[in-house]
Image (cartoon, rainbow over all chains, first blue to last red; front, side, top):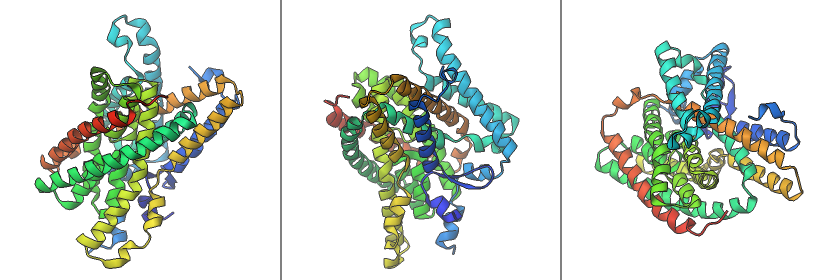
Length: 49
Length: 372
């Protein structure tokens, strides 16, 4: 992704390694992955306090 | 004269510039700080009500601890002179959007459909009225057109993200973005505490309070913080209403691009090319995740899934919201405010008061009979 596109995109950001990350998509994927793990019972009870 | 591409290239926030200075080890130092403050927030939330017996202290919600600890952390990294190095880990946007996707799991799909429809109506009324009021008063106070566009977009839509989107549209400078971002946070921080207090004073129901907060506070993270202070119903409605408002960001950004190209810079019909692409680029994709999470969780509950799964998702959602609230505090800096004088502050303040009043009116009309 070019820097122009990077800055045009909503809430786009740059990671510590300089690689472009679209935080909108990243947050969506991480959130849905965590939800799937929770619903499937894969989140250890010790983590939830 | 600079080209459009060059102008966009320099239209970065100071935060982005700071992040480019950060190395991987410093990123992890910053991340450790965010996580440590998040753990401290959770610890205080759990233990203060046990330690202290005073009524109001017992009822302090986790956003308050998180933001105060974040502000303290901000002071410490400033004194240590490591702010630029660790700032890459203060990812408010990522934390809040992940938290909001997870919030979708606790909102029934029919609630999103009903509240979302009302939210879009409220957002259209609010964004248009607040945007043009801010634009008008900015003109009266002789604030430049580019800064007016940033102020109007940020106060009427969704704070820093809208300011960045508007900056790309009107070719604003990075100093103007950084200035607007500081103003947004300066006004959002007290609103987190003031609006829940006023909602209680006015006796607003959870949905009306949520819709008022969602239509009023500029940054999504601060909306979630204020909604969480009022309660779960208010948090859900505030998140839905704010998401509806976020969706309008693309429309406003494209409209600003066309206005500046056609009327300010007089570039002609070429300016209209690529409008639909820009609309999608600026669409907040996490809203899709929020709706999908709600659909999955609704199906899961209807299919007889264990309540422990939803409960675990809710706890993890609280973790991400805490990290977002800590990051709001950590990112706060007052130093940028002296650059542009008092006029933009007066514009932003007036627009905020106008937004406060009109959002209360609209939320009271649209959400007075809303049941979750």
